[in-house]
Length: 333
Image (tube, rainbow, N blue to C red; front, side, top):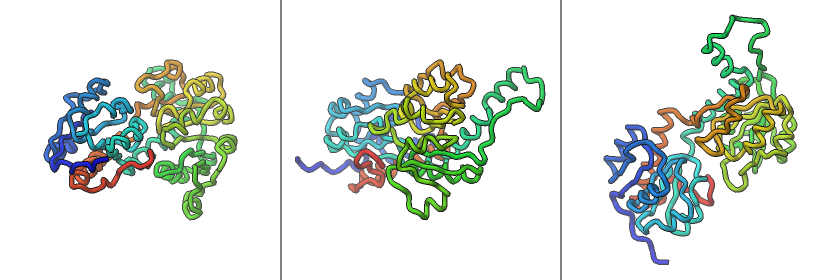
């Protein structure tokens, strides 16, 4: 295979979605940047056209970049600088085969996402969304000893699937609220980290599911995690369990989840992500014990600007002829 030519000093960069003004301003100054005229998810044809006219593509989670699109891209496209940490929407093997580097933005959204998860952990058992709707409806008749009774979380057991940066950040917050921490991970954490978090490792996910009171998901979506929480595993959860997912839609089997909630096999759920975003199963919309947010787990201005800085750094280092600091290898970071 012939050696690749050096990157252009001022690369042409195509950005698929609107970014914070500060980020767009810096990118416009540093690169030959083409921005999206509005903030809509690009169609497949629009995405192909963008890939055909740039050295660097800056996509977001809404852009599915599969093997066919990558194969059709001209040799000019050399870097996909993803605006986000997750890369399950990019065919990494196809990109590698075309010698297209892929980068992401790890680490900068950890605390924001953990805050949102903790908010859902509190909101679902305490029925915050139901209470807010009741007040707005004008039907609230005032305080009552038996009104809007929920459940306390202190003293309960929280199960965490995926104990990476975000999972550990959630564990720290949850421990402060009096929850005991259980986790399932491909690899056990060092004893010092377990001691800091008060965390108990379960090598067997199915075994952990039977001993917890709340469950939160923090694993990437890939071939191994697709429908990881399937019908059989959801059935292992006890009836009083609340399930939280602010990771990726598709990790939880939505059909099985809806069925369990409708039949009272689960106490409730807090969902920030969906299998077929932005479409949401209308049966979920009808359930009062499900708190739903529009994929906003990382939606802080500070986090979005930090993501932009990561993207800019990756492009600049690549344009200088060096390996970008956040290059994605082997499909996962």
